[in-house]
Length: 81
Length: 156
Image 1: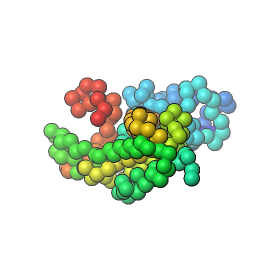
Image 2: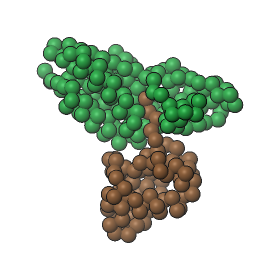
Image 3: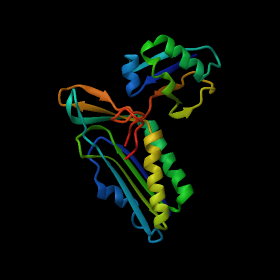
Image 4: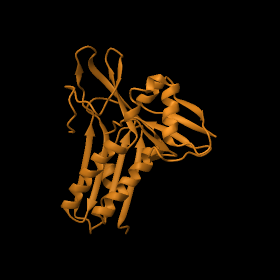
């Protein structure tokens, strides 16, 4: 199944990309997506432990399962305000 | 008259404080009005010089959704009341307002507490990032986990 990945804020610089399409097995979790992304985007590795994930604009835990068409956003530590 | 009003916005234009404050006024049952405005500070870097501006960017849909959720939680805890939260994106000059929160509650205890909680939680959970743009053209994402001295940052 395919999910659309968004690299946000500083993650854009780490990944050298704004977005990507990720192909994962059925029932893949956010944790697995995290590993695949760290593998495919070496610039993300150092920051990865501090990066939170959101699926369809809601924060998720690593155990959350992904489904076809999900929008998976990488949320580095935020700095609004 | 509505007893619970929430106004959330992410805007690319200067924030008008009176307009934001007006969203929480007008309910005579709400006697405590509290506002917070975050102004951009302009530090000077030893290597790159002065900050020319800050660039803010938001994951727009989620930023709005999160601020809505925070406002609802604040009113659950300190309501009934009204909440307005507006964050600016794009280029912001040093000293300009990048975020404003206005709260009206029955009494001042709730208004102060809700306003404080809202800005603290926004700075932790709303997907907005800022980047320092220096006069020499260089850019640096602000890392909220590190203070200027390199130690854990104390929030203003």
